Length: 365
Image 1: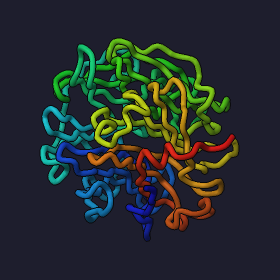
Image 2: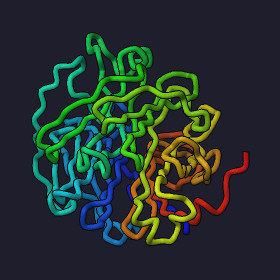
Image 3: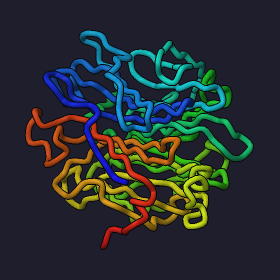
Image 4: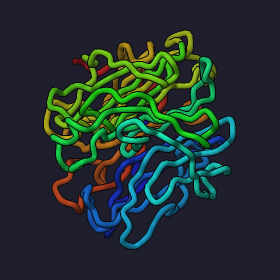
């Protein structure tokens, strides 16, 4: 099974960017993103936080809901996370963080405590993948988000690639009391941000980050203590990175669903999926979904979601309760071609596929 369609349509003054998609405690799918107003640019003067909800594993979607909107206010997307122990969804976003106790139907303020004295403070999740809840180890139930910390804000300019390379580091934010109190890991991998992470079956956390360099490599790290501290690891030789990088998506495929669909004997129980633009050129194109059966150490399967010449920008992934994989990504309104003008960007597409589609045929190198 493979299908794709637009779920946030660019029109008039609304341009959509920075997706974050999660499966809520009741099985609903929540898709969040920015609605940039009057301009698609990063330095837009007004930006809102919006959401859509699906109750049938992403097949159909309810009307758009505005979570944060105020004339003249510029509020950017952060990371969402589902806490299956409390039944809440927590959302880091501009304009004040939010929480929902009814799987996204209603929202209220979320104001966690933190006292981070390390350089850069707590850090932020803008552009990063959704958080996860640990399933293994002594900190089972911990919530953890990939994040970026700016070590020196003195004269920092986010539009400056040099500043990003020198002052930005990856980190992780975590909570052991269901989001009441937040803590931060060490800072690592200078010149990175907009990361994603996933838990392996042995409890290690695999971290994969956008890099602002021109070496075309994703930067990876591992935590063996449930996210308290990360150690830099060797660059992944398979995963490509564009010049100055791009956000990517990463998700663990639940073990119970592998058994349910009868694939656990074939692929094991340490299956993770990764997607990003897989191109040697200058454009964010040729979106590729990959599957690893060993927690991201190697990538045994890969399939193209979009072709070369078809825009595939920031993305986010989740797995529905029936096992369907949902990949949300920024593209043109027609899902074809590259954006040659502002009228041709920026919409959000949803790709729905199952593991059988991804396992059927590898991309020929």
